[in-house]
Length: 271
Image 1 (cartoon, rainbow, N blue to C red):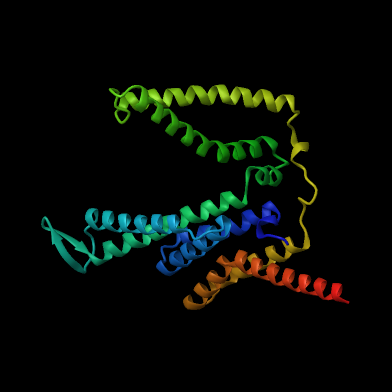
Image 2: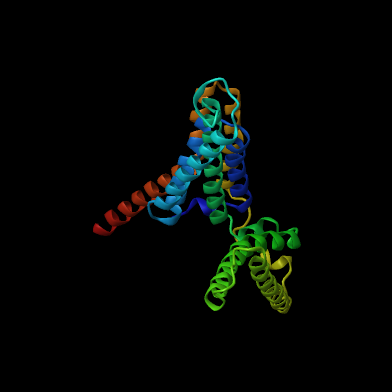
């Protein structure tokens, strides 16, 4: 059974960019809420469990952004209450909530993007530019790895040097220096290994990496769906929502095909 992530990397990249860019550029609460909901569904399917942690994080992010904007920005005509002679306005609360929705949706969708477009797929997509492909894939891979390493070093410093405060500038510089030294040593080892393995553009070619009929169909759907910006607002939101759940629609279609195939196979065996 085929998965949505099995599409050509260029097709996946185009789908995710056109899904992410609108709600990051346009401050529309309905669009941001639809994107957040679709992204949570997508990540729940990826992780094969209810995304309770991501939902909690999204709610907290929206609440924090709403509170921060309400307390720092006092512009607006509709005054709700006063704190220290400073007005908390409805417009500031609304702007903070929409900003929080946008940020939460962006975090969720970029998480789905990184799960669908792995380092290997980026190398395949940019195989004509092997150095660029290698750089991008290594950045995507190493950023979370360095963050994990930083936390390990921080925990080691806390255990071994209780008198040293890791939160001050000296402690942070000490931890950063250790991580930076480890990163340099690790990068040299990685470079030597890649040279010995003959890393070049021919490594990134793979059977089935070319465009297939399903990629052409999805590309056509992506292009045609952009006509929604010519529609009235409520119809545009509906079309955008359908566009955001294309992976789930594709999954349902493949599951139905698989059920029909297995039913047909079992019926044939009986005879």
